Length: 301
Image (cartoon, rainbow, N blue to C red; front, side):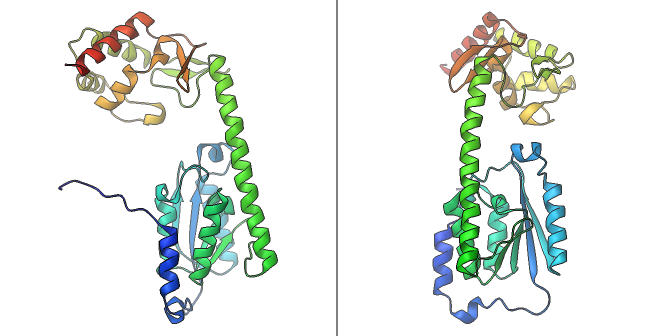
């Protein structure tokens, strides 16, 4: 079917089985010249806050590779990906690096630390096994990884176990903090278009954007305009999205999300529960309900 896409699952087990079927000479990684290194860097939002930016990781890995006299053949970055929640299937840069190792295009996969590759023990072990079977090496710019000896493997696996424990502990703490913030009426994550944070971290109306939000709700409530109509109008007036939508032109999807967001009516939502927000509403709850009624009527036509 034209335009259809089939998602290909990156199957480590299949890759390992394919390697096991190859003859030893087919897996020979001996090549003339300096060892070829691929640098891999990953950040989640938390990492960026803590100073582990992509640039910082790349710079440290470059210094490490140069100190080893390795030839850097590629630098791969994975922005905004969690090594605890995100499987390899959802991390194309890591897939690309592992495929190059498998295909014999590189001899070393270099990361800032082992937890840049994965914070799940089972995935880390599979990556280590795959790289080792290819006759390649896994290197950390900040840790002394050596899985050629029983002691070295034990140390490497200990790092992996502690990374998984650390991520699980952070996730548990973050979930608790987000619930507490919601109960207190504080927003979690990026603020929606129309708001900004004050010095105390509380959402306040953005003087430039708030009028656009009010106009969008009032226009839609008349039943005369669609999401696309409102997006076109906002774009013509020079407005652009913000928050997790980035700074882009409005679309029917971004307008739809805005018109369904009860935060504008002074409500904070978390896990399906609603709490009174500390922030100043941009619209009344009555206007918000009218908009939802119009949306529902259009869906049932």
